[in-house]
Image (tube, rainbow, N blue to C red; front, side, top):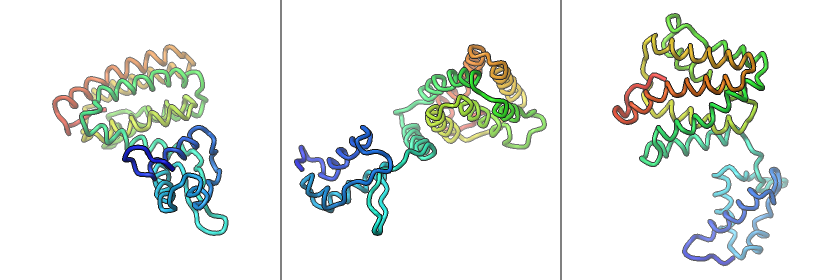
Length: 242
């Protein structure tokens, strides 16, 4: 295998195999050729093959098992695993100057506004009731309960859109926005506003009002934007109400 420039041979081989997996030439569950075959085919040592497979394994693209029926196999996609990997990557970007909270919120708008419309179109009775269960009275809530209910409402709404890709995209954004800041206590007035907004979104979903659900979510996210941006710009590590 000819390796241009100064890149290690194992990286070049990992690139080739990754491209075959992502193009579909190698399907989930397919067994990769054994080490001697890959070594001969690409003109590299077996140690280079092993290192390339380690790279692909670290990227959750292949899994290697031992034994008579063992070998390296293309993994089956796992939504949970993909979302977790994205959350780690976004989290790393978020602690640098490369990704601002404003940019995260822009992406959140792009995901949650249309997701609300899809939920209005597709949510069933059980999903509507699950959303309703998050609408807790702030004055009767236990410490920390409002934060959990707020997060659960948004996560359930995206799930109700019945599109697993939306959930994959949304979960890392929710996770980074939650963990980037120290969560503090907001007053009941703030939470009254949040619950009011959630009721507006839910009402539109329940009556299958697609545009109404989008508009209610758009207005809700607009009201939440200021606290995030204010804390991001002025009080890094401070309190974030929602």
